[in-house]
Image (cartoon, rainbow, N blue to C red):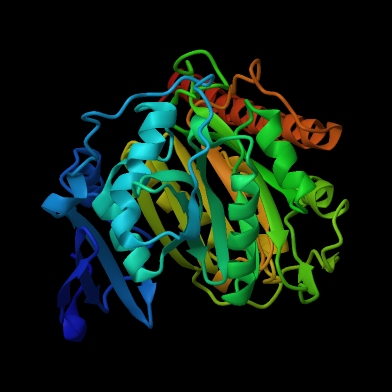
Length: 443
């Protein structure tokens, strides 16, 4: 549908990527900024596991994923008991080593023993997915294994960008607590990340648990933002009572593992105060660009997007800021909204000077501040914005590890609500204007 004239060649490749079939279509037609609406419908109905659309080496790339049978195989809980927090402690020895693909079923059983079916990282219940991610290098981990080969504790990391990982999946069988196993796993994982050349690591502690926020802060991470309504309602064993009534929100923590190179941030004025509240308490070598006049830039922005149907989250990535930035982002946001997204996050390259002026109108699209991720792969530093279908975020169950976390979180929530209210006001004003025009004589 995007090709015409002399560029009507379509290149289709089919590959196996772990537990999924990967179909990639390239063409040189009208530039795209995301998967088509028809593909989003197929993702939403579960026929596709994911869809992505972007420009790649001067060509459009439309990518879809279909589940192979192994993608849906869950761990068996037969004979596995969900343990109480007060389970009797065990003195059985454990072997601490790297997580291997063959450990995936035992890891899933460990998670089930601790959390039943309520663990929010649902992929860990699917051993074939975990094994495939380990084999491809997308996931790494450290485990403690008992004499029967069962996983007693785990701490892992997933690559989220070039040189950046998100660590988590931390779990300890209640019978093996109070032995310092989790700390040892965490130290081993950190050293492994440094040895592998990872530049930074993210964490996403929930806003309903101050302890996990505090652990990240004590280990040298800094608050980088807040993802509001980030995932579908979850049950948090030992944290909240039963299933949450609303979507869950996360803090975003970031810790550099190597010295950061100096860089300049070109932040649109509506978001500058919040970015400063993130950067000022850190030792990150960042300065703010002061020019507000339009900077030289391409006519067209380069934009890609993808959609997670399970959590109903769309991700928009702006690789190049062009003169049509607002239109390009608006078109893609509209497409993802129509596809069913409840939350959309936009990644913007904040080291590109043109963003400061061309991004000034993004709040009018319903986009509020979410975070700043320094040294985030190909973006350089990434300014993260968020669109919420329901910007009236419930903060009644939020808890905070520090006053700084509270202040930043409350400011981010306030901007999200204000942006939503402004959008409603604008629509109502337009509706009233049309009503007035309708009453005028038509002759």
